[in-house]
Image (cartoon, rainbow, N blue to C red; front, top):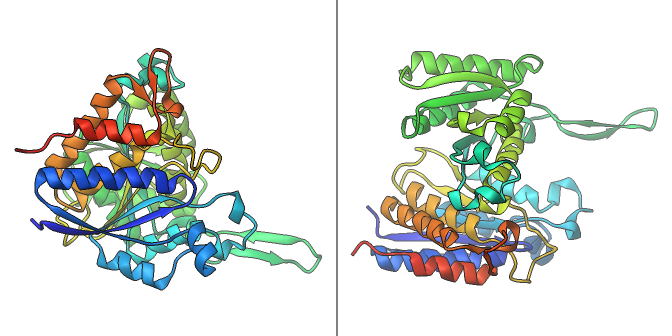
Length: 372
């Protein structure tokens, strides 16, 4: 096990720098307690990079990412950059990082902490006990498919085109990732597609079924579900799901929907992984980020919820730094703080104490215990 890790920190835009500051502080504290070292490099990305260099991702930052064990990313974008051409908008940096680093699997755990059951918009009896994992394919599909773009037609009107494309190999590797993840959980995979009308996802369903049948995953239950039904079932009965595996666009939408089961999108972490997913640091570079956006309306006001970032740090500890015990401890610290009645604005409930971003980070830090 390595004892020294290089982490690239990309705070990004809006509330990104605030939540990332808390995340790095917590990671530094955990490193001291568990006897390993972290070395931070920081770079500009997204809108901040556009303001400084005219583009959302520079070659030096990409080089740093490729040389790091892991990347900790804040949030990107905001109204300030909405008028830019699509090719240079802040969000293009995110797509480029995923593609250049080979991060084909996005893991988004959706677990409702019991203390937040009342913060969900659904009834407690519906959401309590929810614990699912969305495995989203990340480097294929409609976000990357060609042709794409807006063209002017002879009659003066315009046509916009995006292309949903998947290859057998892309589907095979994300299917294996889902089945392997399910083996460490409750051994059920729900593959979500729109095979009744989209040929690309007809192939998706066929390949996922073949991988399940021919690659020794008989110990894992597989079901297929159309995306519109899945969107409904997540609200109707979320506890039926263990691992959901789906395409890039469907995963983008469903994981944000699932986030609200937890009470707030500010509670949802994510890990984007490639190669030997979830093994030792030499084999599994990853990028870790909260699912929430840049929230420019509250930026700089100490109102953001840092818990999704802290939980993303826990995913980093587990998947890229091979520090599973430290990850468990960090997740328990978050739960203890929530059980103590502390809340940021997005999850505030009657009878709970409202705290800011920095204070929430400090409270989690107080609960972290070392392995000594």
